[in-house]
Amino acid sequence: MIRVLQEFDLTVVMQIWLTTNIRAHDFIPKEYWTDNYKTVKNILPQAEVYVYEDNHTKQINGFIGLTNDYIAGIFIKHTAQSKGIGKQLLDFVKERKPKLSLHVYEKNMRAVKFYQREQFIIQSENIEKVTNEKELKMVWNK
Image (cartoon, rainbow, N blue to C red; front, side, top):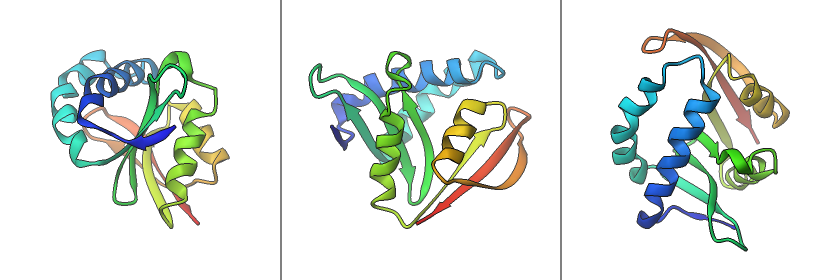
């Protein structure tokens, strides 16, 4: 089931955010994510966030966060990856938005391939100043 983030979901969602970022971005020091944890936890409730809750276990297995038509990220619990949850969250948002954009690290090839498979096109490249890593801006239009 996909539903809007509730305040009581925040601890679980933030744990998914932290562990997923550390695992997916092993080319960035772990401290980058831990240092940004509190900031993200404070701003996340102000974003448009949808969680994927397992119908049987009632556990949150992933979420997608947006600001207007910008996807700040799709995060899926490691044990729930490759089960179609990310696609379901993205499809849910695609039904509600005429266009979407996002940034993804070029070295996160799994994510780049996922978004390309979902009809996102690379629009531009840049170096993120904080991490000094190449980022791709990807866009999708209905």
